[in-house]
Image (cartoon, rainbow, N blue to C red; front, side, top):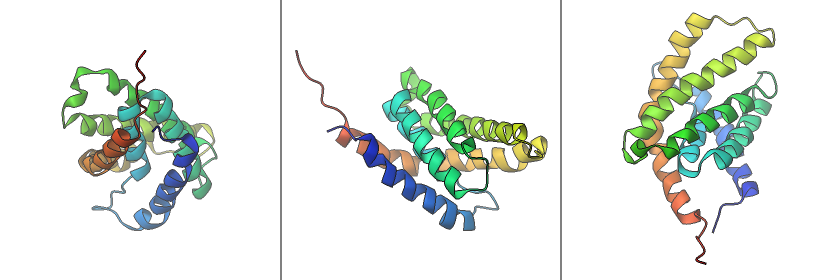
Length: 168
């Protein structure tokens, strides 16, 4: 049975709460884990652009409401990142166990760059070099290492909720 869009809202709201409250207090050598990004990238790889972008927009909006960033900045960056990550669904390399890690690495850098761009365009002072070198790149590396812990359970959810193909 296919997973309904409205059923995803509580899941992504819970992820946003965990990321904003619990994960914001913990880091690996000062590097935060962007769990929402890993969820969105994983689902985009598994289900494609449409569902990935729904997850990106919904999860980003939940994070927008919990952050001090301009409203829509995280939903925009996660939606765009979901679309770009979904392009990996069409490649022959998608069966490689390392593929989600590579996509997560690139998606994280794209997400952070878009987010910093939105901040910059809305009047926030952005130290690009410092932000990219000391936040975006380490976060991308951590995400690429941690994505198997997110991707595997979501792959099982994908398998269990995959729409059944009808025969004609």
